Image (cartoon, rainbow, N blue to C red; front, side, top):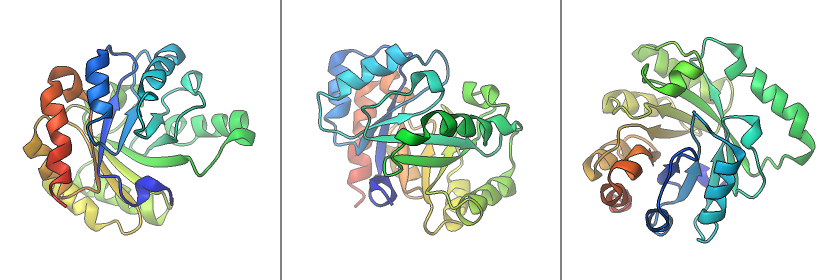
Length: 230
């Protein structure tokens, strides 16, 4: 298993379609976060990805590309996250795009750098939910998806993605009980240090994204909130 499977606790996620000043990006990279993820849903272009990559590379922090389309795939990242949207109603988002990518890039893929994520999108108003034609799962559905991620697909990660909405800690806790070797990532609605701590009590790793663009100082405080829990 690679590094995130063992000790990543906090991730910042930057959207290549959004502007971020150099001083804010530098602060993110120097904050003590375990890695910076580049990924989004709308208007993700190769130029936008390369711009963020070149700026993040000024710092030693690990850099991850979460792949949203084949046109924006580029070498140069430390790791690559590949979502498998488990609650999508279309096979395209579970298998077909992955099959296409394997045909195109198989000979150059380094699986020590690649991690397939069992993705469960839990905000019906999120762009990613609509784009991937998801169906809203109930409590038992989410628990079953987590169980499938580990025991059926043997995935290294199960990702509960609320995409701007704060989820239910009790559900995250219940999902965590289903997982032994598969790591649980939580993302969505973390807009304070207290929420960062609350979700980190249940998940292995939390992701902070939107807060970077609305309140950089609060975003930076989520790092210390998580690290102080050790």
